[in-house]
Image (cartoon, rainbow, N blue to C red; front, side, top):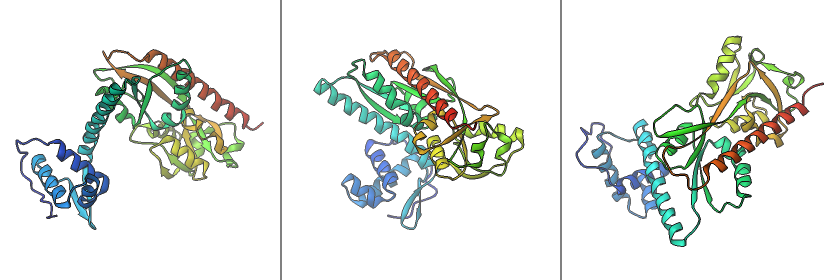
Length: 323
């Protein structure tokens, strides 16, 4: 493949076509035009030509060559996010056509934070299905921005997220406000305390939460006002991952019941964290989209399960408190 040009000039009047997006997506997934060609069942020169056309049409370079691999730049990453939305839409249309052909029940597309997909949704959906629901579920786990994007673009029927801004075309209702716990492995010195305060984390090995979604910012506020400066060992964007890191002895973290619930079997020790750090969750759906699957019943099942999980985590914490 010839060297990529850095000065590609202004965007041409020609538009990107599906074959361009298909090739670009394959390159992003495999890291090379050779791998993309194998994935698409076409030749390496053909993929190289498509990549050259993509960059000509876009008016900017998308990749750098590093030791024989194509490394995407920031513009490629941004383009890839939108490209994935296109293919999700195509997959949904294809699946819908198949269901219509087979006269299958409706499929509900739900977007959710990964932590809630692991801890909340399995039980909530099981409870919802006990009422005799025939619909199938398609769960898409995304960061908060991805959940909002799928719902606002009507690629998802319903979503669960946190920290959501108000945007046109999306309605929401409260799910639950949860309080965070200080999470630690068995035998940790904090286990002897009934409460862990922000000041206690000064110099302590700490596993940070996602800063992209603003979760860690809430904890940082408490730490800053206490003057504590933890020794940050890991930052984990997936909150349940931070909890698992704590269980393995990498440090302590601050997480809520939804993140903790799926890891209780690891023998976690939980202590109330002061000052209180809370996280708000909301159920969202596209405005003016007809409810033909019983959204209210599904939301009620999710809320009931959320309450059960929070109560179970509180009971676990109480059972391991000193004294």
